[in-house]
Length: 267
Image (cartoon, rainbow, N blue to C red; front, side):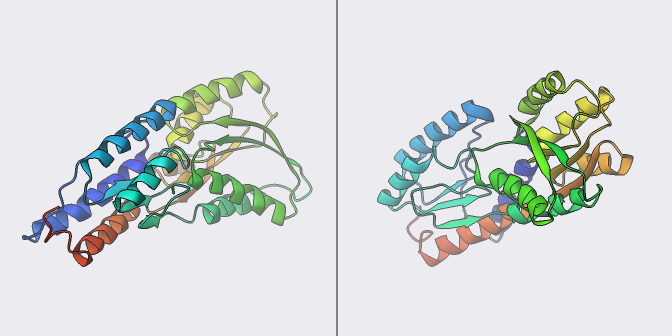
């Protein structure tokens, strides 16, 4: 609930469910859980899903904190024949009833193509990546960004990688970045996998007057768009339709429950 894009996904899902419930008749009853961020969030979500499986609900809807940590839980859900609807990230080693995400790789490529066009074609770019290698969407964004530069024939060097995906990890990562690269002009481009971590990074760099770097990011947070308008380090932000990911998941869930007769079973 600290990453605006993911907050929008949840709101979109809940709004679509609320619209269905207002029609009268059958209703979808939601029991919400919030895992949180970082390693603690991953541990929390594994525990939460374990508790949910014991209750044997009509369906589980989840935005995974980690692609592999929930693999065993997904296998158990499959054994119990509990449908699993995932959005934003997938879960490995099991069958999901439904999965949707943005074109994260394509968004990363958009960033790479745009950044390439800002520099002389013969310049070797010095990059720093703020990543989150635990989930599919952020991995795809980095891959798309770097592949676009390669396909353009751009020479580049990744000087360092940091983990940053939410405001807290972003603040910690940018502190280390400033220690590792204290000299202006030592880095050309920073790429952040989302605005959740990216906004706090840009805020700190702007305060420290590190306008020698330019920033590419992902999510389309209004604050990041404002930074682009005001020339505050960020030059491109590949937007995803976060709320629509949630709405599409809700539509798929409702259709599945209706088709499977779950409402008649009073689940």
